[in-house]
Length: 467
Image (tube, rainbow, N blue to C red; front, side):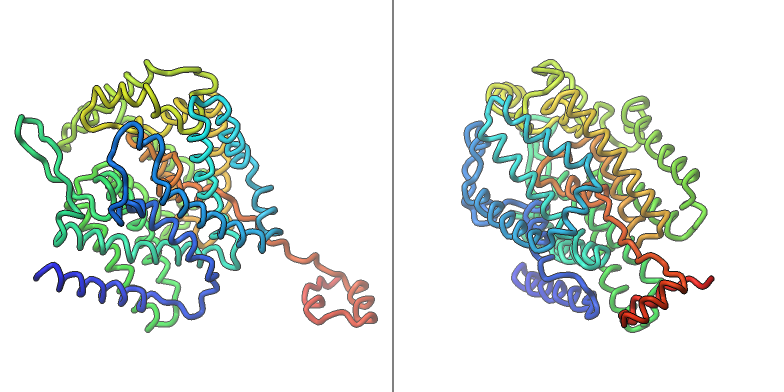
């Protein structure tokens, strides 16, 4: 099949996925398309890359960034803020319920003051606020669970099939070639719609877990026709994710996907694993296994064909720790990989790293020990919020737990705690608690008589407690 015919076939297939998964009764707001666009850009490539307007990679251009991309993100953030202004009461309640996250973002903004590049750090912090704005749009709608489904399905139906199309038929877009271990040799890496194979693994992890969650949830549908349509759409998305895992060779993302999928299946199918004590034990066990494999028994990695040094990550970690500035406050928000530090690292490594390949180390480098402590509080409060949602049998709680654990493990070998990073986006989505609507107080019979005499509305009389 030629690339042109393949493009038409895939386009038709994507439209079919949207049609099959369409929910006419969904209460998701039209404003949901704003975070969908945000996630589509963050999970693929900047618009300047797609339009071939991105400046050549260098220390200077990395510092300045692309004006086109900057204006696009600013416009999306501004429109998102307008939406949130119309939901002022819900947004205020949500922020009051999540003070740890608010405090962390405030500290990130304050750290701009001691950055060597305050203007650059400020721009990046504004982008990070955009992530928060988009998550708030999703969670302050009429039906947050439906909004989460819509967000992940819409983005997944576009990004994963297009990644498959690019990998199979458009090698100039979906593949990259890097120097191999031997002089004159080259390695081919599948990147799909992203900029590297790790990015492709990350989005496959995110939308693959979403497909597993939605497939499990289809058991509760009583409309057989609608259930069959959605089953086809989500099964196709999951099959695409598995195919990408097979060809992309992104072991970190695959391992996190298996962990998250296991948690989804356990918590969805067996009520036993929703009991707090057993759930805590399961979570701790999974994290301990991950830590053991990465840091204590690296020979296990060699058994599955991986480099025990995590492809040079351990050497990189030692180097960046030797370049730490103020250990208490860090170098300022997203400021470590700038200026002379970036030049030095790029002179050492041909692949030009711009992250520490460890999210927690990245927080320390940029925000110091104070930032690490605040981020730990964010994670602890977020985990508490997820467990509370599971105990309430909230619809998306099992997915939020899977994203939480996947993000924790993913950040052991990748830096996913940064603005515009999809794994950071879904982590925020997972840890922010949505306030539970308060039911009106029950009325006794004397109060009912008083309300009846004053022509109380009928719906106020439904909450009655007989004496």
